[in-house]
Length: 373
Image (tube, rainbow, N blue to C red; front, side, top):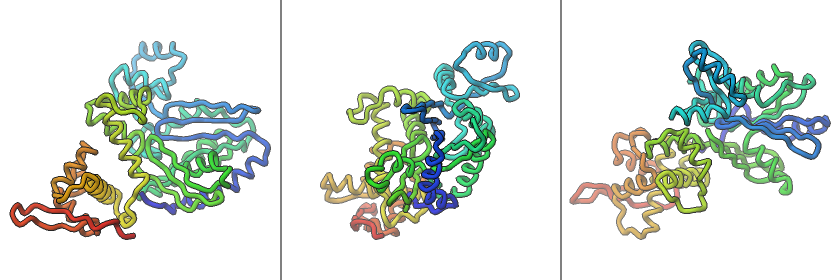
């Protein structure tokens, strides 16, 4: 979880002033939440606020004249042809994915345009045109949400923002980019003088912003969102991520105890997400993302074992505790050949001390308290 002063930081600092100027124009700006999972549009109409939403996804299906004619008869299905495929996009594609037991594709990944998806831009543009009409007058205002840059991806955020601006300008709008966490603060903390913390949990990222009098002082994002949870759950219960997402959105209630393996898996990964948001070891913030996450898993496991009043903490107990919370855990994902190497790295970072048992030569873990800043 890294604080980012990326090239778009200045836009975040000036957003409040720019929005105030927009309101003074007397118009009704369009607000657009451009999320990895869904895109939502809102506009004030008198005393009411009109809203619309579409799934930010698509499903390629093989082209055939009969298939195209059949789809054309469905008024709620949007598509375009790309060579030998029909690209079904928007909310309707989820219905097709469930019917064919397939996963939908996404124009965006981790909060930004997906560089691995060749159809990302045409699909995203098509979905935006479903939600946003051409500007009624040239220069009409449109405000759209952007995440804080994930670690090491500042250049990709710059491209993402510039691409969206060009799309909106092509539709006749003057656009304003607003950091997602800051947008939450503007929406919910007016009575607190726009001072506090705004958190936005989306499909690709979870964003957080700390602001004082509407001025952001910290903006960060972590790469754990709804997609991460859906994919993780799908992998451990042998289900497609799209299917896991549908079941989650229809039935999940985190305030109740889980009643089946799907809900148990969802609880595990949402608890992991909340822990990541609440707690980043202070001395580990400058580590590479995967290393920091690995060290966080070890500290969480140690704390859990301490709550159980374990007198001796064996290295194997640390790994077993991690795997209870994260069944898919494998130290090789974090770059370690063995779990012992991962413990040794934790010792280097001052999280714990290691001693070898004289008989078994196995590691005994001794916590050293809170990680130093």
